[in-house]
Amino acid sequence: MADLKPYNAKRNFTKTTEPIGKKASSKNQKLKFVIQHHLARKDHYDLRLEYQGVYVSFAVPKGPSFNPLDKRLAIHVEDHPLSYGNFEGTIPKGEYGGGTVMLFDKGYYTFPKDTSPNFSKGPVKFTLQGKRLKGSWSLVKMQADNWLLIKEKDEYVKKINIQDYQTSIKTGRTMEEITHPQKNSKINLTNPQKLIFQKEKVTKQAIFQYYNQIKNRIMPFLENRLISTVRAPEGTNGEIFFMKHLNNNSKDIGHKTMKTKSTDKTFYYYFKNINGLLSEVQMNSYEFHIWGCPQNAIQKPDILVFDLDPDEGLSLKKVRAGVRDLKQILDNLKLKSYLKTSGGKGYHIYVPLPMTSWQKCEKISSDIANLMVLNHPEKYTTNMRKEKRKNKIFIDYFRNKLGSTSVCPYSLRLKKKATISCPIFWTELDKIKPDGITIKNFKKRLKKKDPWANFFE
Ligand code: MN
Image 1 (cartoon, rainbow, N blue to C red):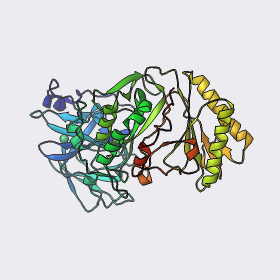
Image 2: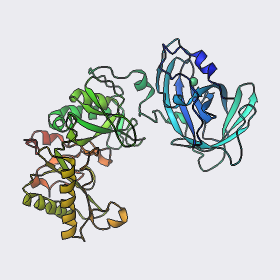
Image 3: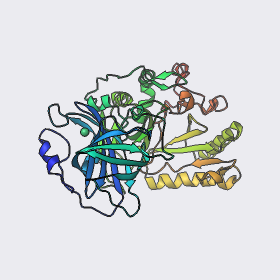
């Protein structure tokens, strides 16, 4: 039976930041599971299956195996509270389980229809729907607390090891990054030689240096604006994490509490200066997206963004003609506009606004986009569905609302070729392809004038 007394008895909650054990009321929802990589006195993985308001827990020394021929020892340990499913961090040395805990996988799981699991006798069969672990598994009891965890044969058998995943499913951090979080702005770059772009041979250090070199151009757009970042702890070939909520203790990063539709309160983050940005690079964030308003004037957007996203295979000539059509409309409206490459297939156009309202911002951007479609329905669409975009350019104006983000000027893109979403002069439209500027060739542009130098004037 579910019992959290042993859990609470083992821990001193004045010393550990683990949650205090309280039984959750069993709602008739989907059952959750979580796997935590726990680097304690002995390295192991903890498998936790929600049942009757607690997590029934097993310590698996070698971790689950994706191979049905492997039988992995799983030691039945004390029940854990459901709040433990969000725990990632360090447990002080000398305390029970002292070491580092990383969220390795989470999701939902099911039992075979019309059965209930017997966690005192076993065997227990279940199907996982996690991000990394999927399919059918079984737990078979041997003696006392010793069980075996076995992958069943199905389409989710994989030829990889559990150790091939080195990062947190929640924060993208490695064990080392969880153990030694950044505390100040003296940025100590770990793993500088790690290849983030394998093919292009771009290292973490090269990206760090890029942002440092470009700081005078990027910071006017990045500083004091709420952001999302894209983390790629193992490079572009590994898992990619879109982060709205940074877990970064740098004093150069500020946060703002905001109510959203889905949550009561959520933290959003902004860089106070270049050190904030560099500390996020240390945390493996390589791409940055910005809100269209300063963090201290959330209701006053000051940037209008149009993203021209062409259908696969549309000629560059047509893409450029589309960019010119949009510029003509903006010129007619006496709106000054700025051009940048997307780093992908299209171009982005930015318009600086005098501080206005989101309502006006949405109205003007949709009017402009819809005018383009009205003039040339065969060329443009504002429908984001792929099948409606055939041979057309999708005019994405949907970023012009509160809480939406767009790729920051000068941000690196985690795409092929290590491209940059780079500001260019209007006169360069025919010379520079949307994916033409990369971290390898941007340097010569630094010697020239900044095409967006007077953007906020
Ligand atoms: Mn453990």
